[in-house]
Image (cartoon, rainbow, N blue to C red; front, side, top):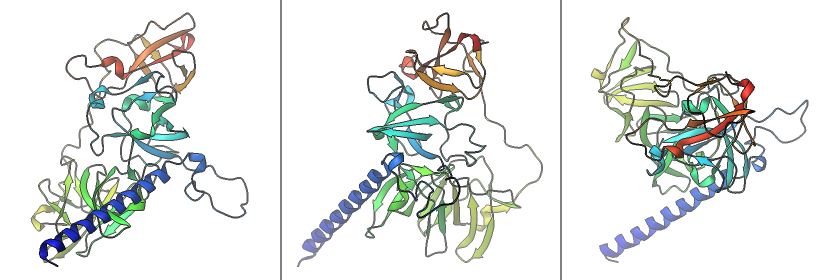
Length: 375
């Protein structure tokens, strides 16, 4: 057999392995798309055999919805819907998604609601991908198509490399298949756990569309930090992109080696044991200004014409129940759907104002509240 023939044979074998891995990954994703009521007992938090006392309700189930996806009032493509037009025409990029709580499923539709009060029970562990502020104040039921859900780590996942480096991830980290491996159970995935972005080896079974919350990693202040220009290396050749260079990255542990400093650093959603050049591990300065808070605004220059307190029942334009307010809404966009019994308003899903009026109407959810409850 010639060298050319051997190369062709190797290429065909590699193609077959890649096809097998894609098929296996699709099976995992299909399995994760089962209705909530049909999910395995173990995943729902129960156990087999006899139980004593009242059964504990399962922990909430979460999913990622890509930004720009239509959010429908009902599980019907003809029902009224809204989306963020800024992302609607753009292809999905890793991490450009919205965390939602899964309520139920009907066929190809998934009922979701915004994650409310993410720092308090029952959502004590903040998701790795946040819910837009506009939705956090609305405890409403929305419907999305399954095709608009994107993969994430459905379990806590980790991988240890031979050079002593290691990667650990929480459940709910956005993930995308990067490179199949010869190992039928593992692949290289692109992941984006909060401030970090990198490729790493993960078990295929750890990737899916639904997950239960897991505790965040502790990034407590320490006496050392990694500089903003540091290169974080693991697995000999892989690098970590830190997208939050302005935020302090504390060193939790440090071991000196001939190849560099082996340090443990963490974000909320990832714990990384990586190599860093010694000159990029420095002491933490005391005093000085802390991190400034994020900018916030009222959503427009006009004063609100309506103020709706928390806990007020909300309905859609057709009168069907939508949910309730989870926080105080200050609205300056009353619509013509108002009547003697209720006042209706548009609530924008836009993440920011862009130039022009590009499909602004697409971004508006129209909700109504009892007139007596509106201030």
